[in-house]
Length: 317
Figure 1 (cartoon, helix red, strand yellow):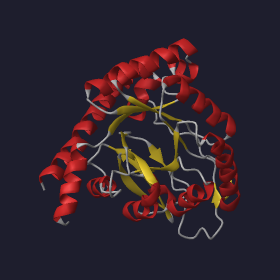
Figure 2 (cartoon, one colour):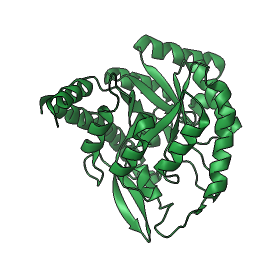
Figure 3 (spheres, one colour):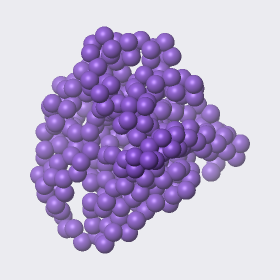
């Protein structure tokens, strides 16, 4: 790496915009041991820039279930801590996006992430998603940014096509460190394909699992998997010439999350995309709940330290 790039990497690594991701506390939130407001406390304690939170995180106490006053209180707490809020949802249809936008506005959020979940032949699925994005385009000037996440079934070039064809200036790609595996892509090559349009990131590690003529993955502790985390982080930090292109790195430790292969070597030009549920991690046995929830918190905090250590290394090399 040239001296200029080394200096740029060091500067950006020192100022990396890290966000607490609610999925790092997925099990705790399933059991309502950690609630949306608690994420703000943790992010503040860890000196992070913001939080990324799903509308359903926290079950009966999720943002989706809160009344207007409670959403306002969440907004004020985030403002008190000077934390940026990003809202996430797990579909791309009109009703789902409408609710996510409602919550984003009520909480003072700046961004909404979505990903499509349709079953069908690829060409038909792409057409459905394009229609969803065409509807979303009416909100292009509402003050929110929008990201579509690469989520295990679509490949990088397909997402690039959807975003480029949208005509939206405030729609971009959220790059996940591991989800390209299930779409039968390699991490660094998928990153290269999507790189012109990536503005946000989910950081995690995973074990890559061969499944027939495709690949699945099981997420694991950062630094213990098969993903080139350091190289991806470096590449993402260097995107953008005059200013950083990526403005949110979500810390999404999700140990034991599993996703099967969705795309295959022999699938042809118009493969069948199977239905998928929203992401979840298996719940622990009843006698292991407390220990597993404590462990999950430890893993989430350890990931913050792990990523900061990599960034520290970038500042001295």
